[in-house]
Image: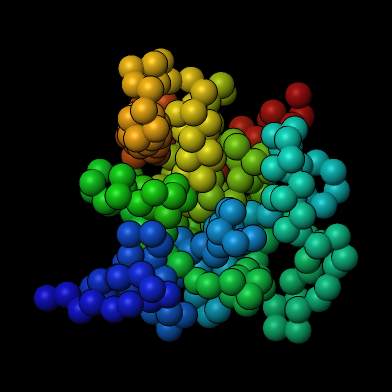
Length: 263
């Protein structure tokens, strides 16, 4: 039996403790469990910040550098994304988090949310549900590993780092997905695990790259073709579908990253 609710004008279905909607997955703080992959939208839903809830009101998450080491797109998007971290450090009385910190950090839930709403990232969703969500960065077809493994990865990376932040190849969502699945993209030319990044690239590809756009001249036809290409690109780029991924132990990941930095 499902109990239907209306959340911000959106019809959702409450199964157990989580409110699952087509657009996003709102969740109450009291329903959080250690090992949950959570996120919060920023800047009027332009993008979301992701992290791993570890219990007792704490979140481990990956933030972009304030020291000039971040790698972006070279476009106006960098100004929007990187402006999310204040250049002025401010201490939180609850967790001691400083807004000028970067890399893998631990903070309280309030600092993570930054006055935003709380959402739960879904794993092991069906292809139909995955495609029903118009925005990437909310779910994946891939299954999550046990909670103990998720927390171990997050804790290990908190003390050893997750490399240099990259908007398309190594961002906060990539960090959270790796903690949950242990999966890494092994090819260097493709985008990372982030559903947000793949959605952006899928949209761009649907607009400018699809040869199918020449099959119709009507606006509705172009829209249908474009959306179809967008959905297909999102699906084949999902971490649970693509074949250029493999499971990598967190100790090996950190060791390999350290070796690359030395060379």
